[in-house]
Amino acid sequence: MKVISLAIGALATVGPLFAQTGAKPTLADVAWLQGCWLAASPQRTIEENWTAARGGTMIGVSRTVRGDSLADFELVILRQRDSTLEYEAHPARQPVATFTARTASATGVVFENPMHDFPQRVGYRLVSPDSLVAYIEGSVPGAGRTRRVEFPYRRAPCGGP
Image 1 (tube, rainbow, N blue to C red):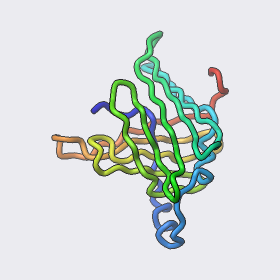
Image 2 (image 1 turned 135 degrees about the vertical axis):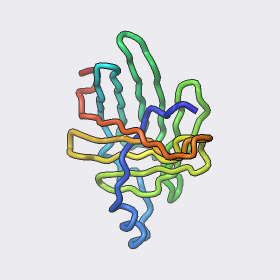
Image 3 (image 1 turned 120 degrees about the vertical axis):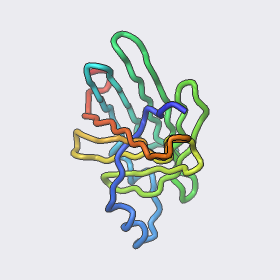
Image 4 (image 1 turned 45 degrees about the vertical axis):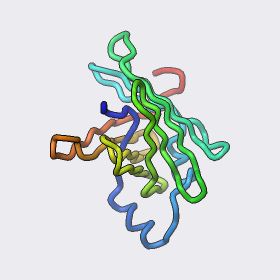
């Protein structure tokens, strides 16, 4: 399965926090995702836009453009279900995949679905108020290795660079 376009940065220090406190990740923990983010290079431009948390959800949309052509797009629903925070990905030309938040804090979140082909983890890490790193990672089916793809974003004006 092709790489899911939305995704990013695990925090090594977040896991122990939840293990000690027993706290469950919530939408409030990831409200810092709200807004518009841009990753631009000579090869492609990726825009990722997140709505405010309302109705127990945040909605994220992304598109990847190469030159003047749409290369990829995705819709993501972050949904609070009881004490579980879910990342429901609707990537272009692929089946829906749902990941569950393993950890979340004011600066990072990691979602996991060990049964998914690739990726098994999707993460976001807030580097500064205007910078975040998204990633996808997991075992590559048939390759016998782990792969990690990072997406460095900067905050951008909504509606365009």
